[in-house]
Length: 393
Image (cartoon, rainbow, N blue to C red; front, side):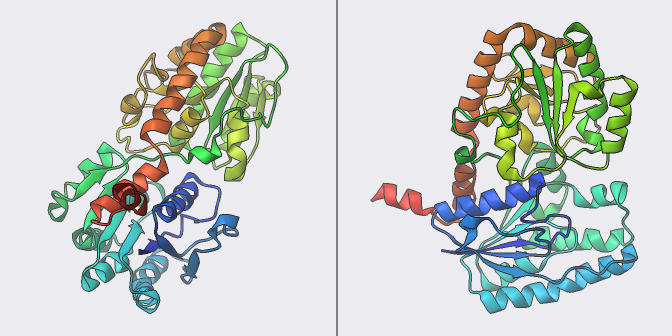
């Protein structure tokens, strides 16, 4: 079974340190374990392939030119011709799988022309996201590309219910949208992980993993930690990741005289994340009140896989993923006092921490692995995974 995996988004470095990079790598691994021979077509690599990608043939698209946004948009649109040619040269394929990007339609139209399944994974409402956060010159053309690629796909994978609702606004998608949240690779999170940053006895560690961006609720986290630290001066905050909010974060911590109680790792490789998670007593996803919460936060799945008790905002998919008081604690979004109270409760109740962490790990390893997600994708595409064929013999 030959699978073409296409990622034309220049903002998704397939071998980088972002959550989206982990998503690409882990799904390719899972497809391979389900009997697929995968070839990767990508615009951005940022780093070397993992050692276990020896059998993955990699095709790199030409990088987009730097300069004016309008020029980059036109170049991204024109790149569809080269992408289509690259697929044709490397093919034929039994499945074309594409991570939706703003200007790409080549993969799904190539699959439709050859009458093979085309599966489109949609992680965000990219047109709205681009217009709000980065700037979008030719919105009308972006909408036409979206209609074109959504219409050509055999199956559309939405990572959350909110994304599914967004997709179903397009008439051509009706009946072809399926929700598949993110997952974990259990091999990365074995029991008994050693902490990368051990604490002194009696130290309570609150941890966060992710890109430091405004919508991740870092201001809420700092205020909540300040409240916790007043109650327990030995508590510490571990922040794993880097991003545009780092300067504001450090300034906030400095103004509150908390820098000595906080450790910021900066960007870390995905292989190092499990060790940092093992250094935490509790892990947080402190999202603020957001009008449109469409995320399937990879970090939360990984928190749970490591057996960390999770405190998260009661918002979007998190309210369904985490069962309050069973696999974690949920707080009102954007409420530092409620977050601080939940953290203090877990600090004072180690038995509760252990129970929530164990239940969280069992839940995510049972229901949310990349292997299961790949099986589901192949089934939706009408291709039976090799593991299922073996079990049926």
